[in-house]
Image 1: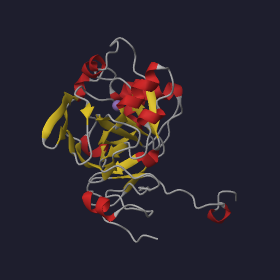
Image 2: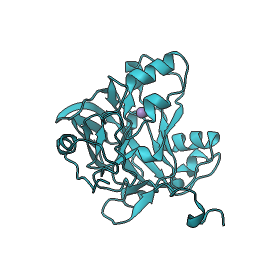
Image 3: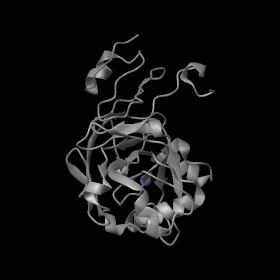
Image 4: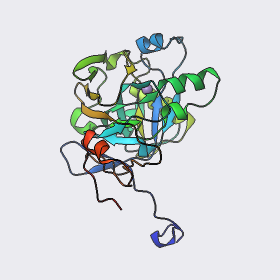
Amino acid sequence: MSNEAWNYVISPPPQAALAVAGSDKVFPVRRLWCVGRNYVEHIKEMGQDVREPPFFFAKPSDAIVPDGGTAPYPSLTKDLHHEVELVVALKSGGRNIPVAKANDCIYGYGVGIDLTRRDLQIASRDIKRPWEIGKAFDHSAPCGALRPASEIGHPAKGRIVLKVNGKVRQDGDLNQMIWNVPEVISKLSEMVELAPGDIIMTGTPSGVAATVAGDKIECEVEGVGTLNVTIGQPVEIGASFRDHKAIGRSPTITAVPIPLTMVLDSGLESTSAE
Ligand code: MN
């Protein structure tokens, strides 16, 4: 009985979820994994050795920003980067999943952005400290609606593009992945037990670059879908800008002291301020 709602000492946090395209159903998100290096040209632009195998890091599931939402410019950085990625959503999991069985675990696919505080990530990398502060911050995981594999199959090729204010910044192809999706799932399942609700951002092509408040970011993965996100104004110190219900709508403001001008600038709907 310990997990009965009345037994919690505070309200349990809302369940993160992704919209399913063309449906009123949503996909509940458990864990959000990311592949560190998976496209040769991006590894080169980051000055790393292309022969090194990819590795994994994670973001909190409540970092998800839905399609059409706003990700406020995060604190502490002067170099926020976009990384457009194919997102894979799992309907089943397991340990040591063979490559040949990995596609059976996939519910569907989406388009995501691995937003990165590049200056903080590189500072951590250089002194061999963890990457969370560079990668796993609030609103760091915009992610569009999922398309079920039962509708679109398992895309192994197709253009993956990111535009900022209409200008192409990243333009690659899924067939440039060093480790393909089944290999990524198999490899990750050697490290952790995967489970239904896990999603994986599968790495980014070259062209990563800085983005600033006010930027309109448009992403598309051919055959999968689109994602549109605005980079918002920074959140003022002491303010909160939280949206846990990452379900296909713009974020709402759940705590007060955000100036009205900021609300207007970011084009958001405000809920009643308490
Ligand atoms: Mn990435």
